[in-house]
Image (cartoon, rainbow, N blue to C red; front, side, top):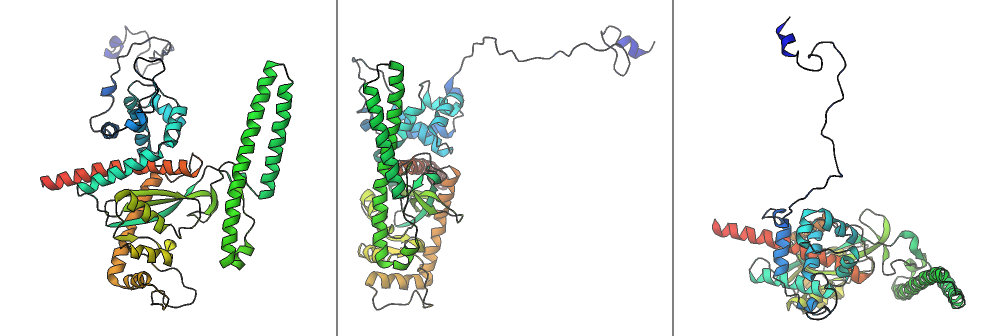
Length: 451
C-alpha cells in the first residue's frame, strides 16, 4: 500500500488520479430567494463623501424655493396629503441631467434601484407623473437659477460676460416623420374626429349600460384629443403658410420649387430640418450661449425654424435683460449673419465676430460697400484684420459645450413635445452643467491660491 492510498482511505470517493466508483452530486451554495432577511440600510453610508449627488443636494439646499412651497396646499393643522418636497424633485432632475437621464419613467425606476437617487429621495417615494409634471413646469425657476448661478460666478471673478459665443444645434424632436400632414389631410382628420365625437355623444345619452358607457366615454375622450391635435396642427399650418408667403416676396423662384407646408399632429411646433448628418428629420433649433473661456452656459433658447439667421439680436436682448448689460464681444458662425442685426448690435456697443456669408459674385466679402452702415463697415474691417480672426478663433471652445450636451443626452432625441417644454429640457441641462463647471472652476481657483 502506498502513502497516497492511506491518505485517501477515509474519503467516500476515489482518490485523485485513481479509477473508482462514480462521485455523488456536487455540493453547491445555491440561491434561496424565499428566505426572509433583515437588513439595516443606512442611506447616508451608500455614497462616498465626494459623490456628485451630494454636491447637487448641497447646491439645492442653498436655494430659495419659497415660490414653490407657497403653492403647496397641504398645511399644518389642516387635512390633505403632503406632496414631495420640491427640493427633492429639483435635485433629482439636476443630478439626472448630469447622468444623461431624460426619461421620467427611467428616473422613477432609478429612485428605487440606484443608490444615488435613493439617497436624494431619503425614503420619500415618487412616481413618473409627478416627476414629469415638475420637469416641464419650472421654466421661470430654471431661468432664475441659470442667471443667479452665472452672476455668482461673475462676482467671484470666475466668469466674464465680456465675450460670449452663440451656436445653434438641431435637436431631434419627439414627433415622428409620419405625423406630418398637409392642410387638406388635417382638415379631413379634424372633420372625422368631430363627426365621431357627435356620434359618441348621441350614443352616450341614450345608453343605460354602465360598462358600455365607460367604453364610449373613453372613445369620446380619444376623439376629442385627436380633434385638439388636428386643430393645433392647423394653427401651426397658418403660421407656416404666412411664413411661406413672406418668403415668396423675396425668393420667388425658390418658393415655387418647395412642396406645400406640412404640420405634425403629434408635435405641431416641431419642424423638419436638415440635421448635422445631412438628413432631414423633425427637430427643434436649440440655441446655447456660453463664455468660451470657461464653458459656462449664459443663456438658452429654442427656435422652430431651420435657420440661425436673425437669432443673434434677440438672444443678445435676452442676455442684456438677464444680466443688466449686453456683452462687449459676440462670436457666432456665418449662419447667424444678418446685416441689420450687426448694425443694431453696433448701436448697443456689441462687436460681432463672424465670418462673412458665402458670396456668389466672386467678390471680396470683406470689402467695404457704399451701402454699409457704420456697424457693418466696422464688422468688415474687424474680420479682415488678424486680430479679429484671432478673437473669432476662440469660438471653437464653445463646441465643447455642445459636445457635453450631446454626451449627457440633452441634444439627442427629445422626450417632450412643444417649444416651451423643449426649452425646459435645455434649461435643466444648462443649470446642471453650470453646477459641475462651478465646482471645477472653484477647485482650480483654490489650487491656484494654495500654489
